[in-house]
Length: 426
Image (cartoon, rainbow, N blue to C red; front, side, top):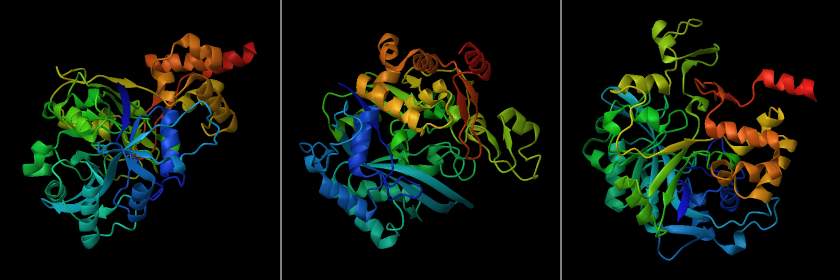
């Protein structure tokens, strides 16, 4: 059965995250978005782990969990959605340490097979580190130390480098990363079966590195708010709904069962291009090389983004596709499409959100609408303009200004000329 998995999100206990990111709302909004299996996020945080223990119940010793009925949100604006979300135990850890004379800052996704394993890991970390200050704790340990600890507790943990290319906190990041997985993980490298591509890169960019040919490329939302759930995700064909089956599909890079990933347009990511946000400088890799990596405004080194960093490590040209590559599709969230189609700046505006609720209640979950529903069905409910917006997103007919130095890229579906023409016709 086709299932959509988002294996990296956060809770309300992580810094800069929405207070609505509790298990009840994650359960509901995953269903609204079309995510079938979602990570709990933040399981090292004591209060959140207590919520996990008290509000979730394991499904038949599968390593997957569901929200207990008494905690389900029943009265909400999305009457057309029935929440039946499954949870997988997952968190993100920040590792900060020195290696070979350089400070390394890595974010790592950790997926756990059961509550017992999480308890043991939490007990160990609580004795040595401060896991109570933030949902994503900062730990003074190396990636190799983390592997040693997790695999000694339970051999079925999964260790996955998060948003692998972002400059400041990633395994290949330009500011504090490594040039290979081997350099980072040492003897544990054979146990690293997947990396998360992150919002600012897509699989096609990662295919340029032969060192990643045997690595499974996964995509997750890293959601800090409910509307961002499922903005990137993984689509599996599951027979047995278990942690072990998910682990097997990822580790074996099973193309028959791992159907495709759902991707951000990487240009929309915050670190696709190089630059200085404070100086208003955004450069492509070619422009950065022209200026030798120095900002022409403040004369300091630019923040080198994902596109440049991929260029640095790549041993193939863009367009190469490995034989065992897993397909992918690029999408934009439905409320962003509605906003652009209606000429409204904010996806949070009342008009956009009312339209969003109407479409979801009449047509079903968001990802189904964006991925597979016919234009004819969409147009009957959403109208011609929004349907055309969805069509252009599916076809990649977009105007994109790439993100840089922590600023999201800007995507337009309809040009200003089209908007002016429409105004004249009205």
